[in-house]
Length: 167
Image 1: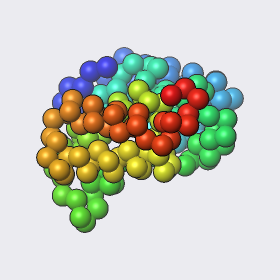
Image 2: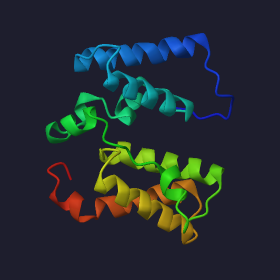
Image 3: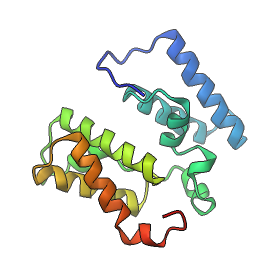
Image 4: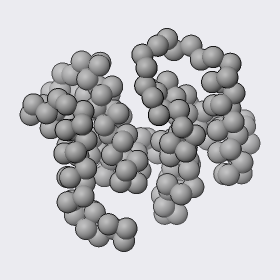
């Protein structure tokens, strides 16, 4: 996974890779290309790809449509478009003024913690994680690695982690 600043235009080989991942997800879910859920999937894949996520497994996980990343109880809510947490939305709240570059860094940190801890990118747990990362940032922790370590520590020591069978 690499992240380089560049234009929003996608090259043909990139579109082919995105389409392959999109087709894989549709096939795994038994969805047709022209359904509403397919549209949500396509938007999420493009959004993640443009943020610099390139590895197919990570893209599937980040879009929330990798079968292994969704608990059976959450699968139905995810398919029907349960909104995922966005650092940009939280950073856009009136009490929090954060630059676009910092929002990108916070989003990368949030995404990494979600992947490492198998946290769905929607719901109360994701909201809590996002708010904790922003709170750490507002308290002066501005190094991406330090934010990641702090968020990982908080997640591993949260009440939710204590009751997970994999924790």
